[in-house]
Image (cartoon, rainbow, N blue to C red; front, side, top):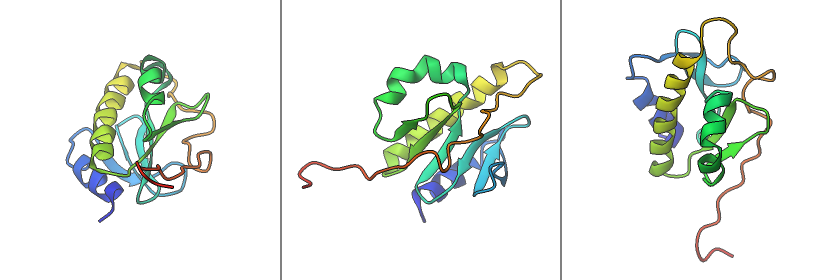
Length: 132
């Protein structure tokens, strides 16, 4: 079982999330009644719809994480799952995303004009200590 499958399995038990096809056309998604929240594209790469306001608030913390990849102007962040700690980080961020989406008033959806980050992010493997 991949880390993304493990994360999806855990998130599917959350009552505020429902499963479906990703709106970008690649992979599975979990979403709220109003928006897609998470797209599972590969066994390790997940896009998370945080909203512009949440990304601005958390930008310095997100930018400092080796698991997180930001695309300028996108309301989505890409999370690369290399270990269980990354899965825990994803679950925490999904909780934040759900709260962020609940805070957005009904009306225009908080969609990025280009959708999620799939095909706009290239994730390189992390280099561990002692690697050449």
